[in-house]
Every structure is written in C-alpha cells, then in structure tokens.
Amino acid sequence: MSQDLNDIEWTSLARYLAGEGSAAEVEHWMSADPERSVWVGQLRQVFEARRRVPDNWDIEEELRRFRARVKAHANTEHALFKGGEASGTEPRPRRVFKPHPLRRGVWYTLGEFVIGIALLVTGWKFGNAWVTAHNATVAEAYTTYTTAPGERATITLPDGGTVALNVASRLKVPLNYMTDNHTVRLDGEGLFTVPHRTGTSLTVIAGAATVRVLGTSFTVRHYVTDTVTTVAVRDGKVAVGSAVVTANRSVVVGRNGIPSSQPVDTSLFTFATGTLTLNGLSLPAAIVELDRWYDADIRLADSTLTARRIGGEFATGSLADLVTILKMTLNVRVVRDGRVLTIFSER
Image (tube, rainbow, N blue to C red; front, side, top):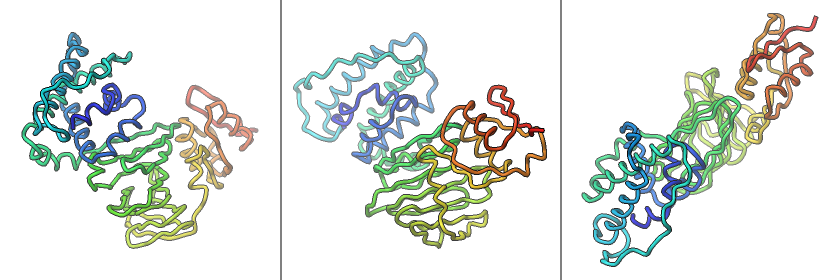
C-alpha cells in the first residue's frame, strides 16, 4: 500500500474528496486495485464524520509530517503495508510537495485528509481485520454524481464503463463497486456503455425497474415527474425484471414493476450527444423537458396554449437561444425575466 500512496498526487486525491477538479485520475487509480476503492470510501466517511479544522491549523506542515510518517512505516513495518521487504534505508527522494493554489474549502479538506489517513494508517497496524469490520458500513456508502438543470456529465465507472448523465440527474455508485457490488441507482436519465466481461453484471435501479446487463449500450430514464421507467437498448441486451430486451427494443415499467415491450425510439439516445428531441409533445409536457434542458422556468400566460404541441431537435444553448426557438416554433411572444420565460399568444 505504500506504493499505492505514492502513486497518486496528494492534491488530486484532496480535490477528488472535495468534489473539485477532474476525478479521472483518481478513478483510474482506484480501478487498478479493489482495495483502493474500499480505502477511499472509508476515508470519505471519516471526512463526513469530522467537523472543519481550525483556521489557524498549519496544514502544509502537518501534511509534510504525515507523509514522512507514511514513508517511515513503509520502510519499517512490513505488516502495515503490502509490497516489498522492510528496509532501514531511506526511501528514494521524491518530488517536494508544493501545493497548488486551492480554494479555502479544499485546504480544509486537505487538512481532514491528513487526519483521516492518519486514522486509517493506525488501523492498518491491526491487519485486514480492521477493514473487514467496516465492510457492512462501506457496502451502504455511495459516491453520488449530480447534474443540475442545463448540465450534463460523463461519468466513468470504476471498471471502465461510462454513463452519459443527462440534465438534472443523479447517479449513486457504491464505494465497494470493485469488490463485486455493481448495483447503481439512478434518478433522472443516463446512457450506459458497459464493457463486455464475465463476472458480476451491472445492475441499475431506477424507479420500479431493475435493469441487469453484462455488456451493452442502453439508456435508463426515470425522473420524479415520470410515471414510468423507460429502458431502451442500442446494442446488446439487458434483463428488466423477467423480460429480456434486445437491441433496438425498449420497455416501459410502471409502478407495478411489470415491463411492457415496444420498438425503440432513437430519440431516446440523442441527449448523450447534446440534442434534446421532442416528438410532438403537448406544450405543458414539453415545458418540463425544456426547463430541465435549459435550466429555465417557462410559464404560460394564456391557458389556450396548453393545446399546442411542439416537436423538433433542440441543441444545448443559452436562454436567449431558447427564446428565439419558442418564438419561431410556436409563433408566440416570449417575455424574459432572468430564468423566467412567460409565453403569450400572438393576437
């Protein structure tokens, strides 16, 4: 484990735990060894349990001292870390730690990082039993990825699979994902691309639907405003309850959990490439989608507008773009006040 600790930039891990910067480096590091995911999960729990460190705490000095202690353990206590024989020689000099400019909150997290790892290193002295005693807690812990209205993201799972997360969505990935807990939870919409491999299948829970797959590309959608969960398969096949869904097919699952099969609507996949496709929705239903897509608050000033329908492809853009689109598509007048767009009928 000493090599594990040296393989990754300390500031990168601090930023990851603070929810800042790119998580790709840390997730790639964790994917190489299941124990690392468990370790980082336990460290995150330490963070959540602790309060902020005092303003006058010398974080840089504490980090230097802690790193020196870690290196000393690596050379003198074979039982503490895995890999290599204990040695009395000094470790090979490494690059001097020079912290990048970080926001105040990240320095606080870095301070908690020092405290948290110190606690975990102390625990490692008692062997793998310490980790085993915490497995039940880790099994219930998740890393949560969230997108706001108007925001999309691509999430890389620990095993290399990806999820194109649509606007206003949330994906929960278990911290022990690499130790065969491949059950993720989705609120919103995501396009999953899963590598083909043997072993534990990926399971996605969304609304009343449970989707299991060994290798494919498929979307799952269930927003809180949806009455059903929709699963659409682009390649491969998935199991939704007792039904097997093959390529170019989809199912909808109601609150009773029973899937109903139908041909796939290819517009279900376009969000992943930055295009919202509306197929002749009623204006009230379309407003729900447009509000999420553009982070808008669209209101109807005239009740007669509820009978209108709208269709077409809507690229990501600004609220000004949305105003232009609504005017041209619906032949209406739109008044904007910040995020609020009020639609009036043209008399």
